[in-house]
Image 1 (cartoon, rainbow over the protein chains, first blue to last red):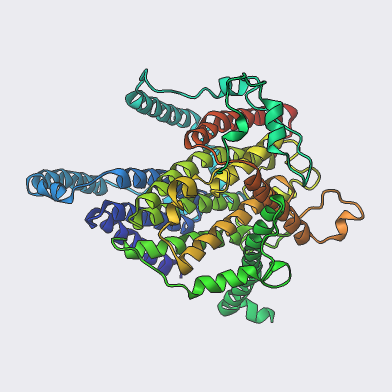
Image 2 (cartoon, one colour; image 1 turned 30 degrees about the vertical axis):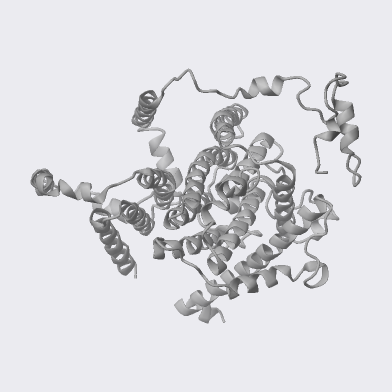
Length: 225
Length: 336
């Protein structure tokens, strides 16, 4: 049963991965990518790694793919132009792909299973402990420096993105919320009797300073005659 | 009976029965939430609200549902047909599957999984797809703008929701929802973590696209936002999904901060009510606040919404998370 489930997830995963690169509409590509993430998360669940499965969905599907979709939908993509370069770039792409494939083969050729791999694979997490705890105990003790460094790399990437896109223009009018809230007398709060409301005229009379003699009367502004 | 339940078929039948026992009350609650919203809003605005169909207008939700079913489903020209029709289904589906892990009483969750809170967080963060796909597939400018707003809004507020959840988890030491509630047997987390409770409630408003953060569907600017092109049953599914999500976020608030099924005090008049009744009462109280907020506050402007999420909630929740961690460590209350 588990083997069958594995093959279902794996087959859909590969099929969706193919759709990511073959579909003509980039939005459909991103949606196929999301389906890929889901199936990968299903595979994690089968392996008993429930924490990784959920984190995969939260981070990649819930945040990263949303931004992909956001960007792809905003782009005005010209399909004719996109396909125009295929003839020219296909050989280069094929060469790069071929080299990567060869490298993969080389790595696989010298691959050796660790002697206790079989044993480790049978028990993904130590007994009597949830795998969230198991990951936490390793990540925040033995690998704490690597963990912190990866955090720093992300921080640098974030600062870089902000620096690249930040433009300080002088002619934008910004709202200063603090200044607005600190203004005195701009807003008056009234005690409104329950189920009675207030008469607009009384409120206006209380709020406004006495009008100068030549100013038009306030009541003439509203309403049709 | 037990022998039958041990077979695969029996297990399946039991799960289906449990699912129905949970989802049918949820759907009825959704129907009456729409009624309660109209009634409460009406009373707050000194109107009567629905009062024609049935006693106190209580059959109004069913009349609305039948009306929706009778109407024609219109797919606009130039829309991406399959995506257009699947978006409301996705929204509704996500609002329903999240209920699988909600414990309404001790041990009453359909799936009592180790990473329950992460599952809920994952499902709630997927809710944005229904909206984005609807907005894009409609091939309409209003719908598209609504979808873009919603994507940015939901991703922004998820960040602070994440920090609030982590703070609660620090105090519990488990990702299991039942354990989270059990940890509050003597003291609800709403009391020591009160600021986080408030921020979680406000973020829940933003996450469910409710007033005053209902910009994705702001009718004064975008007609109806992402579902402007939807009609009949596909519109009804969005509507049901939105209200089911409200109930879900209220249930999550109850679990994280208001002690789930526990009575406020374990003494005579309070513990006469069974656990699920307390759970429902707390959810109803939070839902009332959702409606109350809608009747009280005007809609945020979009830049103010983003400012609140990124410049106020994010630093504050981060600060409170560090503070909680320090306090737990220094007092030795950190759960093992």
